[in-house]
Image: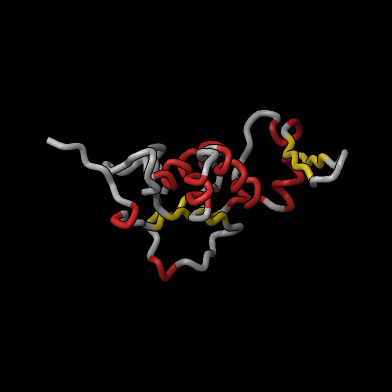
Length: 147
């Protein structure tokens, strides 16, 4: 009996919605990263991009536990000498919560061309309205008994 190897063209992609309201940012990012990689499918292979599309709604209502709002920073470098910029997460969650969610999910994916092709299928949205209703996304029901 031979081992099944999924082919790139034969992958069927679904659309899922994850509601981040009242849930920790990291826990929501783990669920999204696993769906983007395709780890919930029986045909998962780590070397093939077999993941699904993910829409995360209510990013502004995600919570950070502990003292992460005041002690955690996001750093980025502009490319010029001495220009390391930092933004505290309480400011980031007020001004751009979808970026905070995007950064959390991106950090959980592979750091190669496969991870870069997977992060493209992530859509983080402020509020509960999204523009992908034509794709008929399903609400992801995790093990914690959410909606």
